[in-house]
Amino acid sequence: QVQLVESGGGSVQPGGSLRLSCVASESILALEIMSWFRQRPGAQREFVARITRSAGIHTSDSVKGRFTISRDTAKNTVFLQMDSLKPEDTAIYYCNGIRAAENYWGQGTQVTVSS
Image (cartoon, rainbow, N blue to C red; front, side, top):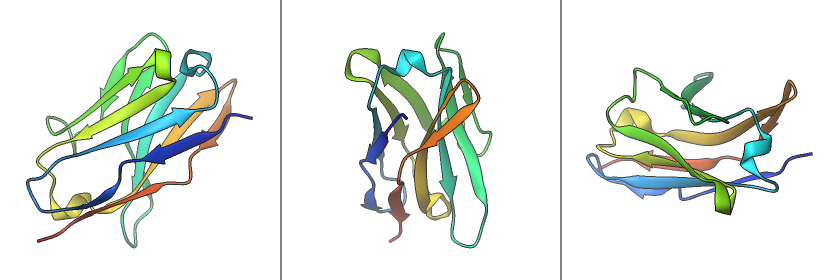
């Protein structure tokens, strides 16, 4: 069982930045893919960005150019740098890891973008 713990959420004004962190209980290189998802109020959970074991990156068109996923393998941590935040980015952000067809989720961290 892989434990994922997110942090870094909070409240920010439009145009601001936040960096989310997701710490895994074991080496993130043991996971085939690590991703960020979000769930906006009244909506289904949606994909934001992912990074594969081989460091391949894919980002949703809705956040491309504003959000950047990265990792620190020595710290078993995946990051989501969020810049130029908009009110529509308000959501609970979840970290996800996949290993051998098993999905692991963190508890989520709230991001609120409001003036």
